[in-house]
Amino acid sequence: MIILLDYFYLALGAMLAASAVMSLRDKDNPRRYSSALFWGLYAAVYLVGERLPPALVGVIMITMALIAGCGGVTLGKYGVRTTEEKTSSARRLGHLLFIPALIIPVVTMIGSTLLKDVQIGGLLLLETKHITLVSLGCASVLAVGAACWLTRSTPLQGMREWRRLTDAVGWAVVLPHMLAVLGLLFAEAGVGKAVAHITTSYINMDSRFVAVVVFCVGMALFTIIMGNGFAAFPVMAGGVGIPVLIGQYGANPAVMAAIGMFSAYCGTLMTPMAANFNVVPVVLLELPDKHAVIKAQIPTALPLLVANIFLLYFLMGQK
Image (cartoon, rainbow, N blue to C red; front, top):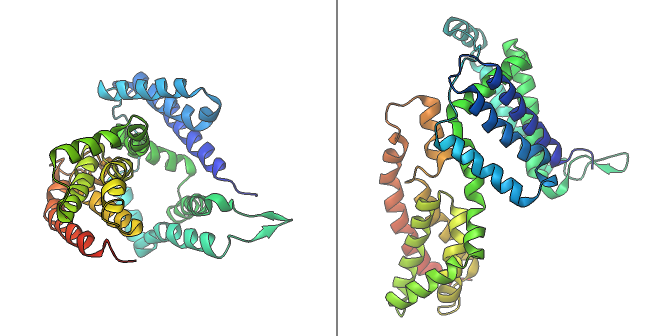
């Protein structure tokens, strides 16, 4: 294989390292040393994480959490274009500004479908095991190149904008990655078994409807707590989904998993822990209410959760 996913991990690590260096040199950042340390540690995870002992990587992540929790990641000066320059460029380019954004989904789809079996010199062009992610990485690189060409800017200006965005989002950049593995940790710690014991001991599971309500609402609640539906699924599937819905009531595993995850996404709409969905947009749009996105989504999330309960109840036996 010619283009591997590891190349994009290294590229991302290099960008984070550059962000750390730029933060360190930014005298307008009141906490430039702690900001540089935060991004430098994050860069190390991508650049040499596989070569480090797992315990050391854990220490790195804890250190990053402490830095962020103490307010160590702050904004600085980024050398971005003036408002007049941005306005002039926007008027000149018009709808052409959408081209870099459109390149990403188009190239990702082409790479994932049409180029998955393409070979050069007997080697596959793209890593097939991670074909979608590799295609997304290639698309992102092409989009950056197109953006620089259209705006007549340099990759250095792109790095300044990258640093500005990562500093604005701050610790929320890391949160989805940490939460993604939380479900596995909970499963290894036996949280699923504890949930099964509590639910069967204190809730009457002889009613199929009650079992469905516990599963769907539990998926939403655990997602609200952990911020990630993939983290909630092993807990609720191990506690209620598999032993009760499948084992006791013969539910179709595919239906249980699909609607269960859909219920989890209802929780995603209602929690600040889902930072990439509910915190990042607030920061980027500079909204005055930090919970504005969540407040707008709750009227959709609650009825959708009720709908999922009835969907699972009526469809769980379908093959």
